[in-house]
Length: 300
Image 1 (tube, one colour):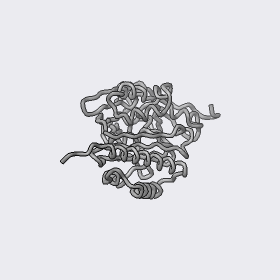
Image 2 (cartoon, one colour; image 1 turned 90 degrees about the horizontal axis):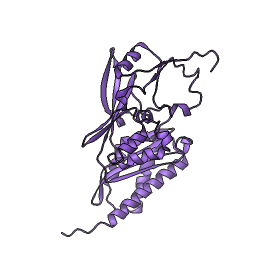
Image 3 (cartoon, one colour; image 1 turned 135 degrees about the vertical axis):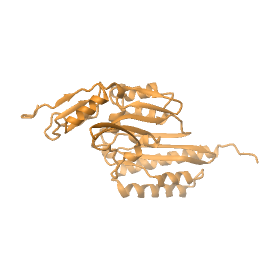
Image 4 (cartoon, one colour; image 1 turned 60 degrees about the vertical axis):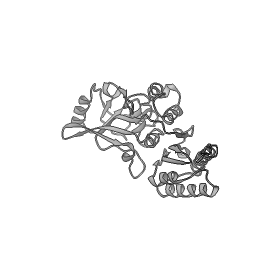
């Protein structure tokens, strides 16, 4: 224990209403979910630097552990572990999300790590938000306002600030994640193995699209640089949507140049990250070229 540092108050609400009441009567609070990210950071607790007077443990709020689905979407409470998502949703969730979860680590880690925690990590960005953005997922937030707890849904993409960081409004709690269960016909995910241990050279990339004859529809490319943030652009997505496969080498070079001009304008990127992204885009183009070349010739 740091000398002279008083232990923070630990609150364990059982319902979201109790959580809202605690937030109304306490300032300088820190939320604790699975703790897998927090406990890997140096000097988080105890620490004079954080100055946290109150910790709210979310694990006993039953509403945050719920999972439900219909024929269009699946909804996961923020405290649902990633392992549970990958196992219970393996035949339902888009394959790219299951691949993302499995890339994070062994079941010892994913049984503790929660979907809410994976989205709300401070200081660095995990690989999960980028994949959820590629899948056009939404989140529900509980916001303390005018002495009441209000609910609000928003696309995850709209909660990414100008620095590429997922950012909730002040005094907001992420309560649910809603994911469409439709399977895009083309899904590709890649993440470096040392994403958490070497964030300065790591990268995660999610790409989804619907394949229609020799073109892509609803293409979405999201690149996550853990130290810099989440990189995506409707203009880049429109470039992929406008392509007709198979591509010529010059067309691929043009995509690469436009993509990196956009990334470099807003984000710091290392040479290794550039090489990884270029290789990923090259693999996508090669696979789609092959797909176009093996299509049966239609008879008119």
